[in-house]
Image (cartoon, rainbow, N blue to C red; front, side):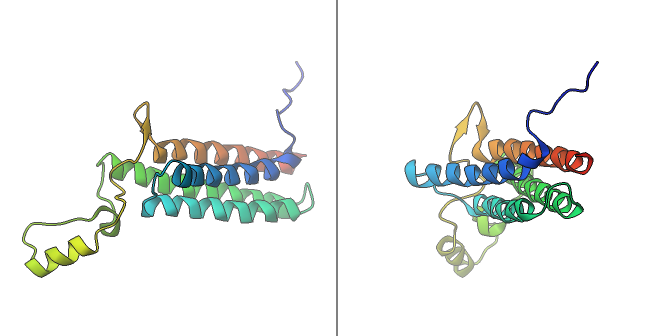
Length: 167
C-alpha cells in the first residue's frame, strides 16, 4: 500500500501557519471593532503569541527549503503557537474559576481592606475582566476556541517541521 500523501507540501507550512496567525488576529480585531467585544489583558497576551508566530513564520519563509535553519524556524513557530495555547488555557481556567487570575485582570477586592485600599481597588479595576467571558458559543468562550485553534496550528507546524527534515 503506498504511503499517504500529505494534504499540503512541507514547503507551504510556514506560509499557511503565518496566514493562520494573521487570520487569528483579524478575527480578534473584527470581534473587537466590528462587534464591540472589548479584550481583557489575557486576550492581549494571546495576541502577542500570534505576533511572534507571524515574525517566526516570516523567518521560516525566508530560509531555504529543506535546511536545518528552516526546520529550526518551524519548531520555534510551533512553540509560539503552543505558548499562545498555554495563555489561552490559563485564560479559560480563569473564566471557569478553576484557578485565580491575575489581580490586574480580575479586580480582586478582598475582605479586611482599608477604606483607602478599597477605593484604590475600585479606581484601578480593569475595564474588562478576564474572569467573565465576553462571548460564548456552545458554552465555549473565545479563549476556549483560541486554545483549540492555537493547538491545531502548533500540531500542524510540528508535523510540518518533521516532514521538512525528510523532504
